Length: 290
Length: 305
Image 1: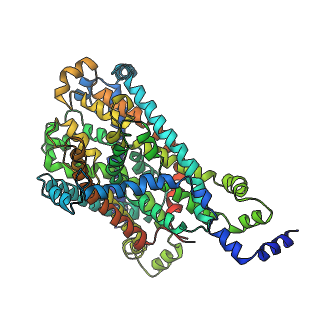
Image 2 (image 1 turned 90 degrees about the vertical axis):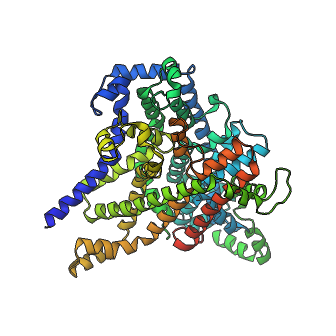
Image 3 (image 1 turned 90 degrees about the horizontal axis):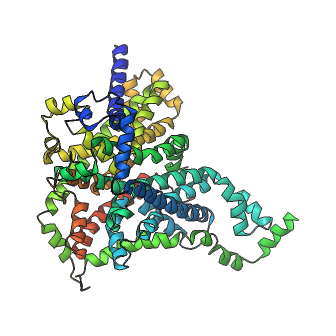
């Protein structure tokens, strides 16, 4: 009886593991095969490395290195926005944790509400606002909204208010440290784990964002990789028969599309694996009260 | 030395101290404030003002809201979104809670491996996850070809993405990318339950089932509520998935399938910014209510010292 319950539990857990992992395995194997082999061979058979190189050549040739452009755009948008987030969110979290200024609670509450509200709820309003400012089509209309990251402020706030004893700061002040010196020499060096966490979350959120750049950018040379992928999808004849002729001439088929998808997540996957520990700890420590 | 300074501080006068404390910390928050205002508060206010006016700026009350609500695409779009969100929510609550409890009932090396495996697809948010699932749903190349053909009767890609399937497909994609993260969160919440409690229950003769359902489940209720409300709000904003399926299906799936898509099309294709604003205010309101509920009701987020 007990044994069957235990094995039932294992079977269920394993079935879900299959559901989560199989698409990933398929994605890793797809670029090793030709489009024809994808249809005829076993879905989990390995093709050859030669096909990966070939698929890459096709992607790279697409609209004269447009794919590289998308990746570097994504790096630029996510990188610069995350830099601004770090420069603004860490001090802001500190100021909210130890400040006594008027309006502190208001800033904190609004930050919290905007942070929990789904980001995509604000995309159209942001688009309408940028449109009235004639900023549509400008890369700043992606970077600046990305640079607003209330979750980063909240993480920094929670970190400072739970792990840093007020006495340390008081002692520094008594010893004659100014506000800035106290932050620079005491609070900032202590913030390393928080910086790692904010960096990861902000970078990944920006990297994966589709809706905002899709709405505010006009030219395909400005696209980040996520929007670029949708552009590639439209050129794949198996999903878009209208692109049939185009598909032949640009050589974008399913293996190319799979490789393009895979390469697009590599940066995230690397950061993801590296920060898995800090992440899990942060997810748990972050929201819990007290 | 220190003592005298401290005394000096106290003697500094209550008025000056209060004056100082009214500003303390503000300079650190200042660089962040323009971003909060420009991209957190102003867009919402601007959308609100657009939603209640004409393109010439004349106030017309709720007219934009009623016009859009009577649009023939409005009803279906919200229906789609709510059906999708319900399916996703049920899947999340049943499977995520179930899996977290199962994993937690017997911690071992294997369970941490499972948690990690469930978590991996989280790296593929956005367009990438949709592309992966477009492959999975294409009977020509899918590793689940057998399931697609014999259980769902789809031998062609267009059959697999038939309109009736879409809310379920999108729910599955969202579950695939997001469930692992939530399992980690709930597992962590389960870990905060004192082991003595479980031990005491076991001594009292409670089995694994009873402990999971009667002891552990109630203790992570807040987290389940948080997951539910947050996912509800996120679900209603659906955009990427139907947008890509629209592109992959030659317009077979309409480009106004979800509410956010409708708002987008109103603004982009028709230039009806005021009506687009009205729909986005509808959506914003749903998100806002959910956020306020989470902040004020679940007590998970601290906002005081």
